[in-house]
Length: 386
Image (cartoon, rainbow, N blue to C red; front, side):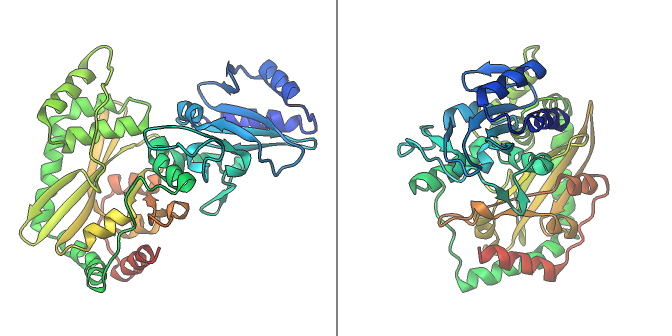
């Protein structure tokens, strides 16, 4: 995220507080900042913006269609509200929408319809106000989810139709097994089985080192992550061969491919342990807030005896892989920095979580699996009660 370019734009429109005329502000902005016009959207390689106007700050005007937002959702998408007294800027990516309001009853996962109003823009997310001083951190949260991650939530919030199943119900017996997960994890990370799992994954990284480095140059974090994760944990050999060929080609045009939306990428059974590992890549020079896991899927898995959920982090710098680490989700520092996105939690979902990229960075360079059993159980109780 080019925060300097965004703040430059915001400083300029704020300097025009009181202009009270949307067309005039657009004209002056175009004279100062080189933005390309695409109908009602103005954009550069750093951000996109839609100008709106209202007589008050509580505006309910229709802002933009969801299909157009989808086109620009990989960039910070700003809404600049022009009022008689001042100009206000919000982030309005799909993560920051509560629902779709206008002409939206036909909205489905496979049918992008409807528009959002100014009143649909979330003004506060996880304690952070939707204001310029928080835009960098807020956009990192959005990047970790993306449009595809937000769409099921928007469909449900708008139409009442759940696109992602239902909230997983846990019996008293299930809850007890879930709450034993931290002890299971603590035993596993000091076992020979842990070493074997780490060795297996490291060998796969070694096999595809060149392709992983090439894929790490892809700007879209979701596409980049999916490719690397599939090279390491995917089961379709022909698809891996195709990805390898496309990455090595001069065009580097990657064909679309479907992946399972499971809890993790790599499953390995041991005597006494049933492990699922989620592969996560970290570009070490970039800030990030990657999506962690779907809470209902996690609880469903951890309610099974012998279940172990691990994270395999791969640290990448330009032209080289720095290191890999295999970390429990209950690792003390990771757990403390795990973010629960509460506004995802509706009647059909407990929501999703995200990790702090700085914590992942440190665990790649200095891996450890210190687990606080008490804190881990308290965290699981919070998730169960969502």
